[in-house]
Amino acid sequence: MAEAGFLEQLKSCMVWSWTYLWTVWFFFMLFLVYILRVPLKINDNLSTVSMFLNTLTPKFYVALTGTSSLISGLILIFEWWYFRKYGTSFIEQVSVSHLRPLLGGVDNSTPSNSNTSNGDADSSRQSVSECKVWRNPLNLFRGAEYNRYTWVTGREPLTYYDMNLSAQDHQTFFTCDTDHMRPSDAIMQKAWRERNPQARISAAHEALELNECATAFILLAEEEATTIVEAEKLFKQALKAGEGCYRRSQQLQHHGAQYEAQHRRDTNVLVYIKRRLAMCARKLGRTREAVKMMRDLMKEFPLLSMFNIHENLLEALLELQAYADVQAVLAKYDDISLPKSATICYTAALLKARAVSDKFSPEAASRRGLSTAEMNAVEAIHRAVEFNPHVPKYLLEMKSLILPPEHILKRGDSEAIAYAFFHLQHWKRVEGALNLLHSFRMIPYPLEKGHLFYPYPICTETADRELLPSFHEVSVYPKKELPFFILFTAGLCSFTAMLALLTHQFPELMGVFAKAFLSTLFAPLNFVMEKVESILPSSLWHQLTRI
Image 1 (tube, one colour):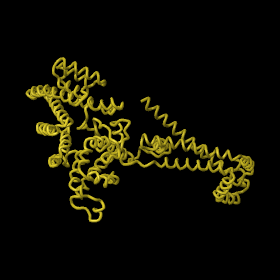
Image 2 (tube, rainbow, N blue to C red):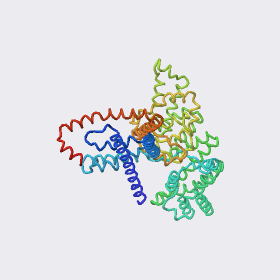
Image 3 (tube, one colour):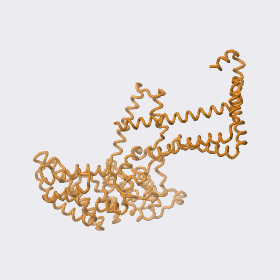
């Protein structure tokens, strides 16, 4: 709370400092313009000031315009930095949040504002639901893949937020209320809450000294194993222990709520182990074996859709180029009642593009029109790009890939990275598919309002910045235009800098131009003032000038 109050005070100070600086500069320029103009008859004493200013050298005017340019440049740099970091204009934000209430622009008592606030609350709740973070079904192994990347590059591929979400998942899937009754499970319950990786690994070894604990093997396979082969061996040991626990809890699941919770935990553990074993087989080149394991797992546990095993199956089938089987899986899971993903949408687009991509030509299509198959392919790509507009940048290699995070945000940059990391090779294998995607890369830009899906959520950038490492430049959609104040300050800075340079190089000529410009500018004002002098009594005007 104290930090938030300090930030608010700092922001207020910056607002008023900026306002004061610009106000002083503005009135000083007005004063300079006023005293350099042709002296009016209403005040002869200004002639003395004009004579004094006429004695000033051109260096004064160079310094004046140079200072104005410097101030404008500093404001421009700060505005650009603030826009790059927070995605909005600082001046625009403080004008709405600080200056507008002072000027009476906000009235909380009106019914319309209450309705607006209710609408904002509804939209914020909708944004939260739209920006739900999902477990990445193709997430890598920490010890064998993520840690190896850190050893080679010195960079951390996972953020603290991402790892914290994984820790919560592990506690949800691998623990239950009865763990305290078994010493090894009690140790593992504490291990999943540990932040230090070495402490987690030590706790897993301690649990294995007591008995064959399936979750302890899982932790060692995920974090201690440095190769996929080592991880597979540990997962096979975990499978042996997990199957025994699953059979015992299955017999007792109807004896009470505690036994039911334990059976649910053992089911999650067994499904997780079998899925990771299938992924190990896929990574080690035994793709057909991996496909069989995934099909058996989906048949044995059809209701456990939270692991999204069908996305692992789609990737493995694409590696085998079993496109008919891929279509069969899509027919089951690409349903309007089921949640979509980039894997579903782009795999469907790839299959449609495969039918026409080898013979497709944009020039020929523009002359003769699109055939039915080409129209279907275009619509499928249209649908995929609308769902996640970040994916084409990675598939077309316009943006460099990084290791995918352990959690993804659907329709966000994190999901695009996770999809392209595993599926880029499948798009390259289909001749002409990337050319067809490149031809329609501009499709998403008019679609932020939503056509086939809900309007694109505005919260993806913030969530992706939490999920993705700092060295990755997060893809933002739709592209944000530069705020007006950045353009205005850039123009003001350039204009005053040009004036300073011209005044320094051509002082006499710029003086002539300035006097001519000011005389023309103030000619209407002089005319009005002369008319006012002729109408008002001289005694009244004298009193007004004295005031």
